[in-house]
Image 1 (cartoon, rainbow, N blue to C red):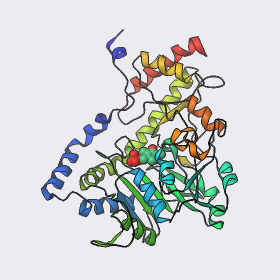
Image 2 (image 1 turned 135 degrees about the horizontal axis):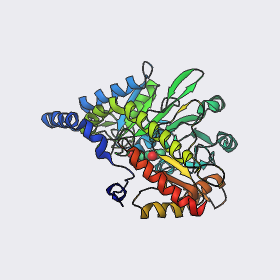
Image 3 (image 1 turned 90 degrees about the vertical axis):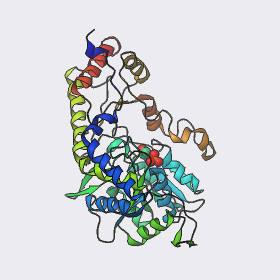
Image 4 (image 1 turned 45 degrees about the vertical axis):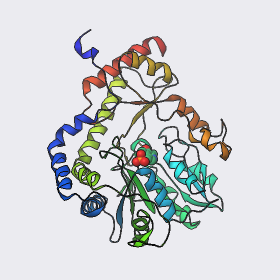
Length: 388
Ligand SMILES: *Cc1c(COP(=O)(O)O)cnc(C)c1O
């Protein structure tokens, strides 16, 4: 075996992209330490303004930083006055925080099954789940591509149902709607994102953000993130302590101008995977199913997730060859023990349940090398010779 085949292929290595910006990040950190102002303040407002410009929010629209993506979802639902018993329609195939934000408020997550190609919520099923108690639709733009929510928006509006987007995995992705580019997070009433270090725009700790085009909602979100404070020590309502750190904001502000180039790189890596798998005859009936980019979508491949019924065997095979993969997500939310009180049972969401047995996320991150992708594809081909 040569040296190359000995090295491991990581699922993610943040050090590779950090190399390019090390100097700028150091300078930003020094600047914050020199001021000794660590919470909210000028650094956070500057970053919020840059996010507003990047997203091309209309006049009066705002980006509001907070402590995490999970808090962003919770604050968004609070700002929309979600009450115990209210229903929020979302997908069972997502990260836990999407649904826990709903149950935290005593509201009820009502799940709709997914589309087996895009892994995103099926709008036809969402429509079937609407009741007089539905207050919010919470689409998750999973793995980096948007839900085509404009198709259902008029119906929701008619019923007074708001939209809160979970764009934690899709910040920087967009969709063409009637010839116009609409960015993830800007299509609904509130868009939420996360700056968890592994996200496409990740900080050096926890962080999150809410965006809205509605000035009243923006003001409410700003108040809720500081304990519902109107003016110092005068509380108009009970909010959270959920602020973005100056240090995070300063570092994220260094990274924001690189986001498009990093997302482009992820797209190239995705194309190269397709080429590698197709040229080795690994796709098609009974073989690998590759991720599908919906017409009009600019997918930013937060994760590159393939499907195969032999997922567990393939994962073990790659692991033996020191190639790391991950499973997002092994158990859909309706089957999680903490949500048993909702009455979900196996068979309720067949597409989500099947995907949880078949999905395998491959390494995809800025700095991943073509030889690493080829090594992975060769290992899959070797597996396929005995198994497909
Ligand atoms: C990461 C993530 C969140 C939560 O973000 P945190 O910043 O980790 O709290 C919410 N929803 C989805 C889909 C995520 O991937």
